[in-house]
Length: 514
Image (cartoon, rainbow, N blue to C red; front, top):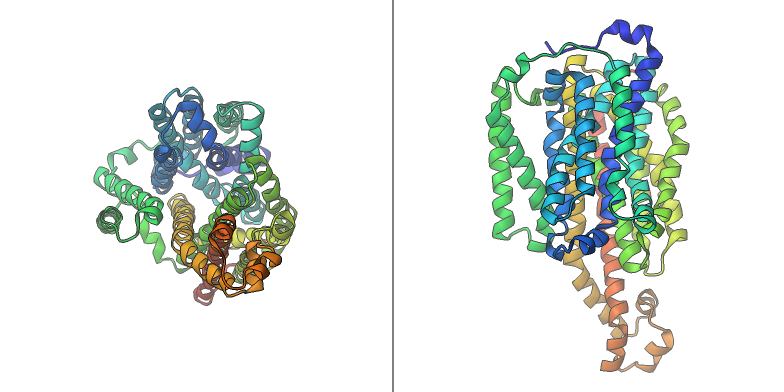
């Protein structure tokens, strides 16, 4: 039987439990923030370490692959180490790995430390959502979930501004050094505050090493395929091989997990209808959340030419809307059926995403303000009710495994969403550019306005654009085609987000939090 927190500790020391939980939230925030702060400063790191451009993405990919492998192991590691010591150990390793990243002098050193950082950070995220349902009574779970949820979705929003400011004000080393002091303090607070449980060393004897290898290979090859497919092509031998390897190793892993009495990851939790539907919502939220956080910097950097700090300032609107909405979400979650709130949240989120699908090359902060407000308001209702739907009715011994799977689905959704966006950009930009050019050649004033070609220039070349004019407008045409491709990506992500609502009729009602 998995370890359980001492209920007397929780009953007698509620303030201590809240303190420990906030320390866990701080650790989770650092783990999520670390991805975004580094992403905005990759060019600076590339220059400092003299890294080849085609190798740069591995600084992020190494972290993400290690993270996605670690997330589903949270249940096993919680049973082995206990929630308290898993968090403290993971955060300690994360801090050490951060120091290693900051001291790296070569590309190989940095990638190695990023793998360790990603693996330790991957267990911090689901541990927090497990703690919500293990540490707190039902009437406190809504506020705890909201705190964790706000930080989980706020980190990607503030990441660009934090990363840009640190890099421009100090140096790229501070992208990692900022984790050290908060990490040490959070680990010390957690040791003192989290419930003490007995270590269960017998769990180590039941470790299925083959399943561990199969799961790691399946998830790593899938993550790598999703990253490389947009540039290599989905039908290339390399990508097809990675996907086949992922499916084969994943299938064997699932089979072993279902036949073993004590599997590495408890996949049988998916038999619970509400957990399955909640996980689908988590997957779709990953597509919309990671997709929108990816699309905005791409537009602002490559179309508008903003730097990391300016991008961060623009994207801060979403985070502020989340903070304002959080107490409202808590109040409603205590009174309204989680299914209805989830439907409203995903419908509003889809609308907010679709509102960004009508941008032109001149769009900037003003055009992005209201779509961000709508998305920021919606996000808390896309996270809080589905989390209760998925985890709120499970027994405490099932929650660590379930939380790992729930959070894994969100990360996989994000990886697939970004791969889909990149595929749309790479495959649609060229035909959209040709279409715009044909309209321009035909004298379409709407096309000229969208591209940014003066109408007087169009009027002077009614018989067709000459070579000199074409050379002048070609950069404008390419930018306009990219914007149209980005708009199509926004629409696709919005449609997928809205489709999640179709699952709701199959979910069972979950009692409100109070």
